[in-house]
Image (cartoon, rainbow, N blue to C red; front, side, top):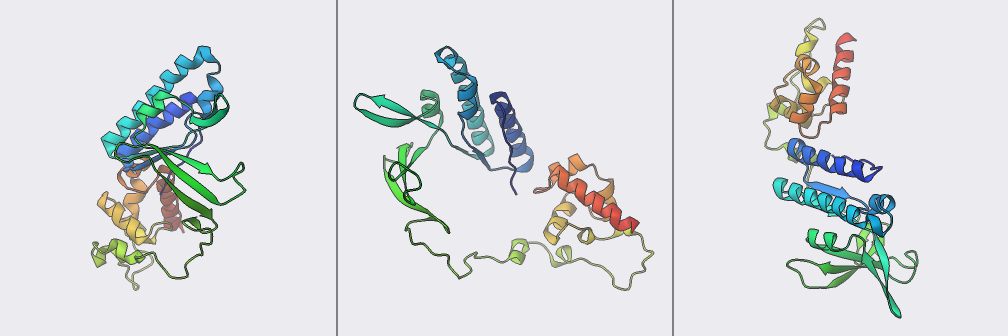
Length: 255
């Protein structure tokens, strides 16, 4: 599962970094991706007089993300904008943000296109600008209709290369925990609150096991549980999803 959000200001961006740290702690998030790190700050802090304030805000964000990465063993991927740097008769692209980003990011990779337009070719180049344990180098790749490839004529493989089957994801779970134990001869007037979790719409066998580990063993316990508390205990279950399960469970009992 994944979560995404849109930032509307640099203050909002800082708040989302704080929220991301909470998710790393409570939900086990291990990858944070931030697109266009400098876009909002470039729009808000305009002019040389605002440069010091902009760099201070940027420094706080970089340090907060670094702390999250080290504390929760989480990977942080940032994309950034570039600006043309004029150097006499020549010009080159340089990353926005200056030394704050240069010192704060461990690995920096610049992606370049072939020619003056990104639509001229599928070929791209990834250039290692800076890395603690890698020498400066570059590699070519292609963005094709089947994804990233090392040739422009890549084709989709017809073979199943997934390498796993869905049931094998729960091979460490005992069979009686995965399979619903519903008696086909049970009376329709039996207590619906004691039904198996897997009978609720939206709850599969794997999620039923996760709910049982969190102490939810029946439909009745699911309905009476606090949504916020349950969402924080069960990996892959958002607050909205828990509330949806509870609504489906109530509808099933009332039917």
